[in-house]
Length: 248
Image (cartoon, rainbow, N blue to C red):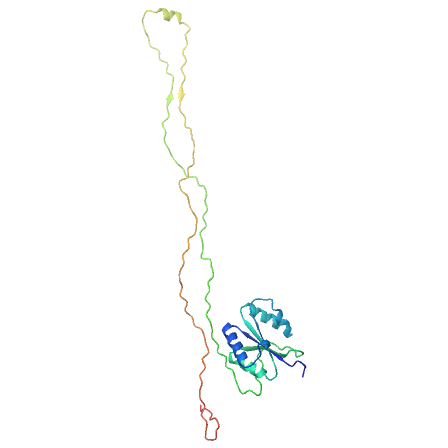
């Protein structure tokens, strides 16, 4: 028997109300307050190292504590071990480990067997919880692109041309003084013609605006969850005080 023969009993709770109820029952059962430790919240969890458990077990406990679980640790004397186990069992708790604090090796994560002196059994009541979440998925989309195309057009325009016409006609009149002095006179006429001149201008006639709209909708989810129901049946006792087995 080691000098310090207290036994460390660790119990992990996933609900705060279960941990609080178990803590209250331990105190009412006479377990000293200084023998009970409660570990919760986010790390660091330096206090776990005092229990000399394997690294993988400590890592598993840290992950559960990080997810919101609560760990109750009791340094129980040999007379209190059965009492603490019974309290934990009452609250459907699972013992994480049981070892002597000084020199007993840590065991794998498992519930220890019930002591031989206890004629009790524990039936865990299990309830499933439905967690409904949501995620974003692609529903297709739209790609808008543009290209320049050539479209043939036809227009009509009237073009004007001017031509010089020389016409000689016989006359019979007396020559004037100007007729005699302007004998070297010359006349020039220019022929003209209109031609087509093309010019193009671009105008913005429409704009395509690309955006997204959103709307919310409510979807009703129907599913089933499982829970454990316990039925208690009284067994009859015969005249000799023996329990009569139920006939099939």
